[in-house]
Amino acid sequence: MSPRRKANARASGAPRTRSGAAASGDTSPSPSLAGKRILLGITGSIAAYKAVELLRELTKRGARVTVCMTKAAREFITPLTFEVLSGSKVLLDMFASVAEETAELGPEQWTGRTPGQQPVHTPGQPSRSVQHIDAVADSDLILVAPATGNMIGKVASGIADDLLSSIIMAAGGKVAFAPAMNVRMWENPIVRANVERLRSLGSSFIEPESGELACGETGKGRLAAVESIVRAVEALLGEEKPLSGVRILVTAGRTEEPIDDVRYISNRSSGKMGYSLASVARDMGGDVTLVSGPASVEPPAGVRLVRVRTAGEMRSAVRAGASRADMVFMVAAVSDFTPVGARKGKIPRETGELALEFRRTADILGEVGRKKGKKLLVGFAVETEDEVRRGKEKLRKKNLDLIVVNNPLIPGAGFEVETNVVTLIDRGGRIERLPLMSKRDVAKEVLRKALSLKVAAPRLVKPAAR
Ligand SMILES: Cc1cc2nc3c(=O)[nH]c(=O)nc-3n(C[C@H](O)[C@H](O)[C@H](O)COP(=O)(O)O)c2cc1C
Image 1 (cartoon, protein in one colour):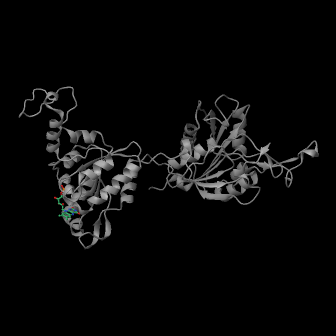
Image 2 (cartoon, helix red, strand yellow):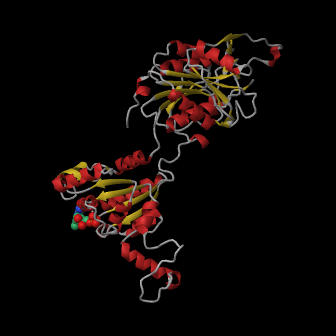
Image 3 (spheres, rainbow, N blue to C red):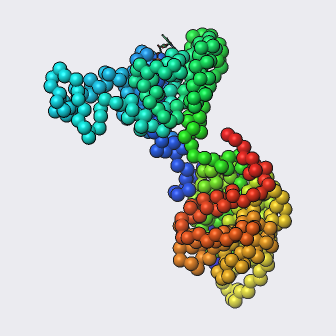
């Protein structure tokens, strides 16, 4: 029995809702482009200045960006801006850069070079003269933004007469163009054919927008909004999102059942397992609602958070949320008993011996199971003995598709720790005992297993494409 913590000091009332905003240590989202290497090619369009904002947005999301500018692009904006913002040298002309670098290196670093001779590369040393190949080898994506009609035409025709077009020709992987040009150029059948040819060869296009153009005309040809380009890049480089469009309800944390206005009974659940599950489901593209009782860790950002305190509040929130969910994961440690008639104020010590009467709380998991419909239902259970038999029984009684059983008495498992040891039992009787692993990895395994089960929930059968 412990005094109610201020943060949770709500004796009654409806569950509070907010969009998760607090970051939370291990459950916070990683930047969407963390570790991705992008070569940003800038060509000679009036929209070249927008590449400044684009570069900032890409780096803000964790991408490492190298900029390459065509000669025409440098008529519109100087490389210095990009050098400062990207923190690395801007790639310019193929031959000029070789001359520059060899001058920087000094003759002793080039075998057999005497003043006036062409540089000769030392075998075994990295070559300095093939930066268009190095740039490609280093990149997850080549993004040409803005892309001129000229550059699109050159690439479609197999011309590589400058550094950027050479880089693109050498690229085996992903290339995306964000065109920007006058509407008549964009509608020109030659440009249309070039775009189609490149598309058919695997390049992506981030369509220009319609509106007033820099030249004063109106029509399609304006560079796509920076936000749209970034989203397209995220989609091109992002991890698979198997839960895209899937509505997921997760319960987490513990409940607190009041004895009086300052005391309650509860359990030792920290909320870590449920929060990890909500966080991984969000990262897999799920539309996550997290119904949480008190917990010891911060909830993940980017989920719809419904805070509850008691088993009764948890029941109301789950009832409200479960009907619209495609997947329900009941991870919360809901109190099985609640004191009968919580007293007003503080029961005085002078009362002497105190006997409390408890009644059983509602079986929330069982209720969801009875109205399961086509949703996928996963329950978490704590069992300290005969886990498999008891787990199987619970799975059947509560109409679950999957049950995750853990025994907190096993070292590294259960409440308050960062790791867990669980056994997965599915409807078909298949049993998977997972080794000791982090709760985040357990969450991934549970979601993998859940996705492998054939259930009829419409968005699971046919996940909405993004
Ligand atoms: C003021 C001005 C604005 C231009 N804007 C564009 C443009 O938005 N899109 C385009 O395709 N070409 C535009 N051009 C033409 C290109 O700069 C020209 O085709 C150049 O050769 C492109 O070279 P690059 O593709 O190597 O960068 C513009 C030219 C000028 C002088």
